[in-house]
Length: 276
Image (cartoon, rainbow, N blue to C red):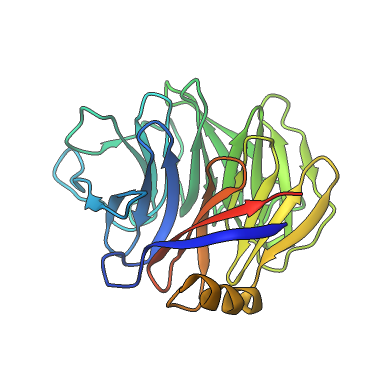
């Protein structure tokens, strides 16, 4: 694994306040950022242009601590809001966030969110130690809640029929089959896994506070891409101003392209790699 470039798309100039979630809109070639302490969702283009979406919720409230964001094929944005313990959505024609209907289920700190091409939502319920599936009708089902299989899940990513998640308290990466409910645990240990994303080939990138790993899901091999020492070298090489502090969110673009946030510093980065 060879790093080819690192670019700061947004530096710590105060625009972002704890960017804790990120997703890529491949159609518009833009990123959406869950700006947690800013209580808003922001849009960031590849050339660094930044803007904020309306943060009003239908009914008169506003967003409060959005933790994660994902985008559907129809351009609808979905977010997990930790302050409200709710999921919300906004289509391109909406001017307000709409609460996602969840029948007979209440979240307790939804940490991450994903959406299928059919519009089924998936969320990690961090404090309840659960993965939850929500049908377009609002009916909720528990995908995993056995504490031997899942404990303090934070990051999730849907790839085909499998929902990958960071089993943070167990220091590992797992995947649950959304059709059968079978859970597979990858035989590698990561001390503090936070976020996870998969590329187009089905391989995973996992963040820790100051590290990024690459997991070959076919061969079960784990490779470290980035740590604080490598970052120091790349700072000099690519003119990066800030030391890495807390890699709280990431998403994959094209093969060998990764976007990630430093939640503490409020920075957004694009990294390209040669995958051997």
